[in-house]
Image (cartoon, rainbow, N blue to C red; front, side, top):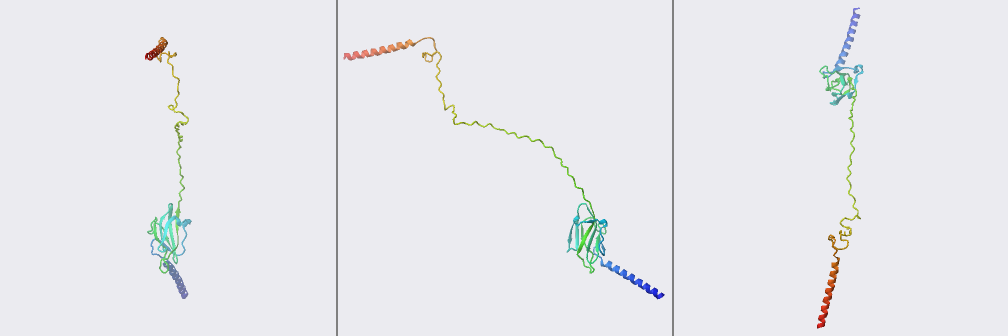
Length: 231
C-alpha cells in the first residue's frame, strides 16, 4: 500500500512539474524589451464590443525595416483605447494608452511586437486599434441674401447732330438779289434829283437853257462865217 501511494505521489508531482515547466517556457518565450505593453502568447483577443478602428483613423508610419510602428496623430473625433501589435514566433504586444508609461494621447512611437524565440526582433505582421469614433453632424450653412437694389437705367444723352451742308445751298454772300431802286418820295416826275418836293416846278429852266445853248451856237457859227467872208 505504501509503495502504491508513493508511486502515485511521484506521478502527480511529475505531471505538475511538467505543466509548470511548460507554462514557464511559454511565458519566457513571449517577452519584449519594451516595458509599456503586456506581451501575451497566442492569438490576439478581439476588441471589446467589436469597437475596431480603421487604420485610416490615425496617421502612422512603419519604420526600421517594419519593426517599429509610429502613430503620429489621431483624427478628430477618434479615441484610441487599445493598440495591438502582432509579430514573431508567438504572441503579441498589447498596449493601453495612459497605462504603463504609455502616453494617453498620440503620438505613440516605437511600438513593436514581442521577441522571437531566439531573442531577435521580428517584423510587424499586423496591428489594429480599438476605441470609439464620434462623427459630427454636418453643419448647415445659412446664406442670407441681401435684397438687390433696382438697377438704374442708363440715360443716353444724344447730342444734336450738325445739320448737313448741302452742296446746292447758296451762301448768303455768294448770291445777291438785285432789288429795284426805290424811288424817293416826291420825285416821281424825275425832278428834284432826290430832293424833297417843295412844290416848285423847274422844268421851264431846262427849255430856257436849251434855247440859250442853241442861240449861242448860232451866234458862234455866224461870227465864223463873217470872218471867212472878210478874208
